[in-house]
Length: 330
Ligand SMILES: C[S@@+](CC[C@H](N)C(=O)[O-])C[C@H]1O[C@@H](n2cnc3c(N)ncnc32)[C@H](O)[C@@H]1O
Image (cartoon, rainbow, N blue to C red; front, side, top):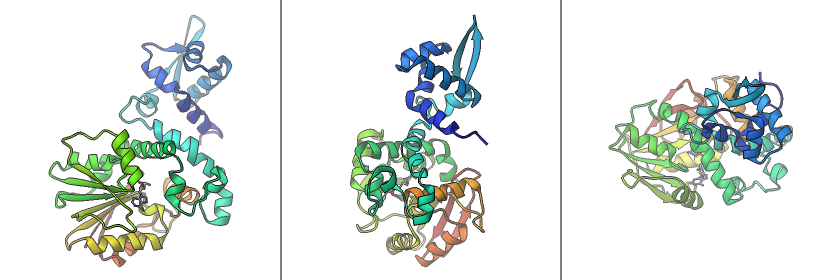
């Protein structure tokens, strides 16, 4: 297990741009050069770089009595912003937001609710008003979510053959990472991303969508507004935000508009049947406690929610990655 405070080292190095600087530098750099280019203190930089070496995020080689630092392969692939698989934005979100909510885990357990009020002084009655409490926070959240699908998106979208569903609606589809994955796997399909208006506006402004991509946006509230007609509704990391009654309400609305033969693709991290693992999913579930109104669930819990909404034919597939796929047909 990584020692206490290792995560802060990772967050600080991301925040300061250590991995970006070293990815762009044509050769390994000494700590004085890194400090000068980052506008940081010489002493602090030296300590941080050496801690990163012990965490295997950086490599150091001593030449002429001076240590020169470069990214490890892991840092080049997952931490440098320029990498297509970069988790830079997710790590910034984790460091600036998630970590602060986790600082109140005991209180979250006592109260059984998220900790935006304690961590940020923001009332949490309207969940996504608290999550999107500023434009910067909304953009950071969206970029972070998008980053995760750059690594795991293909695996979840390829878990089932979705070719029988040419018209797809990604409910809570955010900045469109899974929609892009879907049209790249199934070029004949069209995806409508349905999300709340400020998210759609931010997605259009900050995330690239090619003119030729068969992807469109629709603004709305999935608990209140009419849902687009589609053969398949995607709910990726949406149900885990909500308590059972809200999940049942949303699924019933989908069940109402979905035609026989249509389906719902739920993408979530599945708990074991007894809820005692996998550890990653249990930690996601505690994360949902500190940051949302929901939790992760077992296959049986998803099957029950889906069956009650008119989707009795449910298949669950573990992907081997952190997120799994559940396909339910009407
Ligand atoms: C945890 S995020 C998941 C985003 C995306 N599906 C993914 O996996 O990266 C939940 C998404 O649901 C959207 N959302 C929340 N409440 C909504 C509502 N009432 N109507 C429409 N979208 C909503 C959020 O804006 C956000 O994009």
